[in-house]
Length: 362
Image 1 (cartoon, helix red, strand yellow):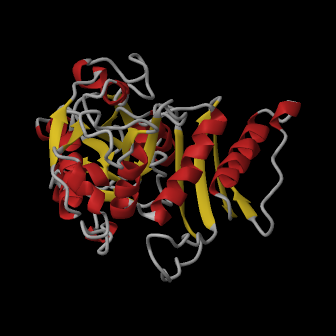
Image 2 (cartoon, one colour):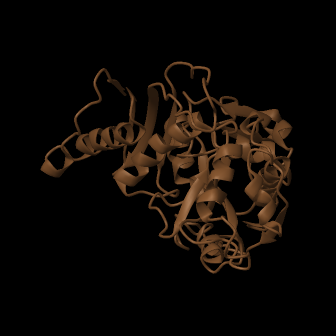
């Protein structure tokens, strides 16, 4: 993840209220190696901005259960315990993999920062250094993702796809010990664990679309209450200040815009992270260089191009659209896909296009 996510002018001198906190920020994280790695990344950037941070491990049902995600609740199974800890005041911040976060906002909480995204692609870790195209017919490929399984079935119907659970190391071990010929994992997760060199094939976005928000993090905090009730009540410090600290030091506007469009698709389809849906958005043109005071200037967001894969009702659909408003773009793509799948339903009427937007279908 690029160090460029840290605003160079977000210094303690620009935020003197930080000195009034009086104790470290408690950053909640799941206990897995991947979760703690990405939480340490966030903590290091906040420390660089002049704040003390300590990690607090929070065990979630998704870490304990060996059942499939769809069996234990799907969307939100990794986030619920962290959110409970926020509500109860046991932690001040929580770091989530954005793809695991439900699209519906949590009352009393706010996603204060979306840092710069890692590589959103999926990767293959296969025996003998094989790529996806080189796997022999009948090879067994493991994944716990219906999205990956559906796209693998399109790309290589001659492969056997097997549902698996476990952390990154466990899944790679299935290949190393010969139980599977390959597994599909996220490039970002491999990178954060220092294991990206074990990928034998990085699947291009034109080949396999990632989960909405894949490769991105979300930093969540309380909204509207004082996060540190033990402070002097006269101190001018609120959760809005904490959110501002996070936004100003970690926020990456292009990533926020892209994942907003991707997650708008899920929200419109009423789908979660276990649904067979892939989505990826990227700027259709380069972001302009910022001008003026970076603490007050509104970022200009260029048009986004959003590509979506949906495998609902055993009818895989792909679509690409460009638009200017991330939420409207995501909703329009979702409505168009629903209309394809259920053309006779008047509730599936497609939303009005953004002026100047265009669509390509597959």
